[in-house]
Amino acid sequence: MRTFTLLHRSIGTFGIQGLDRLLSFMIVTELRALEHRYATGLARDARNTISELSKTLAPVSGLPNTTDDIYDKACRRTRDHWGSFVTIATKIGTMQLIRCQIVNELNLTSKCDSNTLSCTNAVFNQALLNDVHSHYNDPDNAANPGQDSELLADFAKYLEATGFNHPATKIYVTMRPIESFPIFLFLLVLAQMPKFLYSTKFGTLTCNDKKEMLDGVPFLMGIITVLKQLHSSYTHTFLAYLGQFVRFQISNQEIQGYKNPELSQIVINVLIFLEDFCKYGHFSRKVVEGYIPPYIFDQFKHDNVK
Figure 1: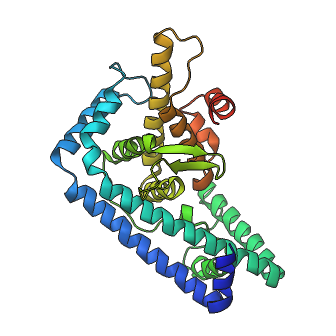
Figure 2 (figure 1 turned 90 degrees about the vertical axis):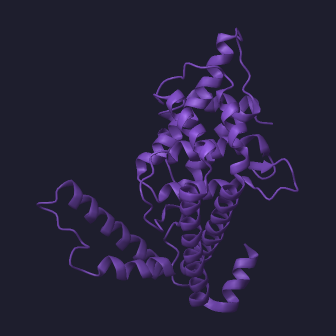
């Protein structure tokens, strides 16, 4: 935080805004690289494994009728293909976190140096959002404030200059629809979960191996950013696969006769990942609770995390 304050003092508001825009273009480049890598660089055996897993887990709203090692087999078959995707996702997430710090610095400075401008932007922004919501609820009687006007585009510049934008919710590119992409991201995340442990010092997942260039929050932010570039149904399908995995693991322990089943480390990591997913992606927790009962979150949070 101190570093970004010094950076702001050295190059000013316009300079730090330029850095923010540069990071945006770099994120676009990495998103295009990930899309191209998935389209041309994913081996045929990995695609076949993903396709077979998708059929086995269908329907995602229920529990798969298969053995409990179905996920381990899929991860083992594809483990040699994840390196480049993890690197790109982590790089995207890191740049997103830097953008978040820049936004926080701009927002704090605007509130301290020009509180009137900051409050005016906040009120006018809410008024425009209300007008947009009214238009989509009743398009015949409520006009669209952005139609035939440059008001929204011009006002967005003020919001960016005063730090009222959220990088995690920004759409950078329009990615073409890819049918198997949610289960691909699910398997990518699941393959990385054994590498993490929850750190009480940092309050998030950290990598077991200090030599490996992997960190929980940048990787998470990268996944959130990729999903934001796609239709919202992709995000819900991705969360549904993670929820199905948690329910399946708990169900297997109950079938084996455990009265008080203990969650495995990988299940705990998935639950922590989902909670952080809601926090950093600005999602309501009720979205995840549609796929995992809320009492499971309460149990793991109080009893399993050390």
